[in-house]
Each structure stands twice: as structure tokens, then as C-alpha cells.
Length: 152
Image 1 (cartoon, one colour):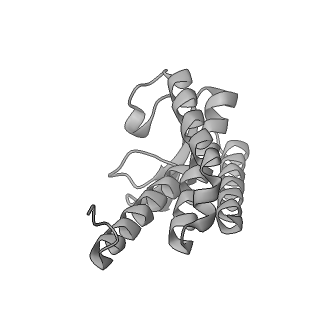
Image 2: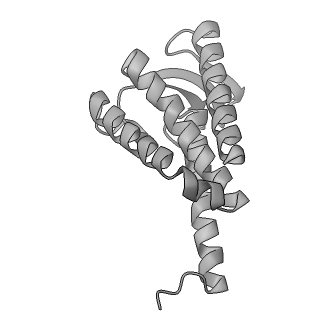
């Protein structure tokens, strides 16, 4: 459980700090090329979910995220018994969810700034969530391969 909490806290801290820097050093809409036409820091507000879907449905996202986080909280005994990979994965997902939840509650939007030009602009919380989900899938595939996933 300690690993889960540590990853969660670090994820939230890094996400919030990165957003703080962007909000205080950039102007909304500003784009700074770090690798021209490949990777820019572009400061935007996203009123929706991934790719701006369901824009303006802030309380829907707040409710869903809160329910997921409550589910994780109620699963603390199970998380404590889970393996390292799963604890890290859940910590990344929960930390990313908390970082974006804070944005939704405080600003009614999510602060995004990572701009790869061929993909919608996102943030470190989104990155943590995606990596966490990927690790959960990897762990599940490993378990299936070992035969732990048998339904017999």
C-alpha cells in the first residue's frame, strides 16, 4: 500500500507543479517550440475529456472520477496485497485522476500543455493515467500467460 500511496503522491505533485509552472510562465494559447513541428509546449484549457470530448460536462467528470477514487480507497486491502507492478499502475492512474480532478474543481477545465502536433494537447496527469492503464493491461496479460487468469 505504501508503494501505491508514494506513486500517487509523486504523480499528483509532479502534475500540479508542471501545471503551476505553465500557468505562471506562459500566456494562455502560447506555444513554445522545443522541437519545431514535433514537440511544443502549448498552454490551453480543455473543458472536456480526452480530445475535448463532452466539453463543459465538468460535474460529470468530477462525479465519475470521485467514484473511481472512492472505489480505490475502499479497495485498500486488496491494493496492499497486489504486486509491485499493479500498485505502481494504480498509483499512476489515481494520481493522474486526482491531478485532473483538482483542475476540474478549481478551474472547471483541465490545464494541458504537451503538444506533439499530431495528437491533441495533453498533460502529465493524462500521461500517468495512460501509462498506469498500460501497466495494468501488461500485468493482466502476464497473469493470463502464467495461467492465473483461468476461470475454472
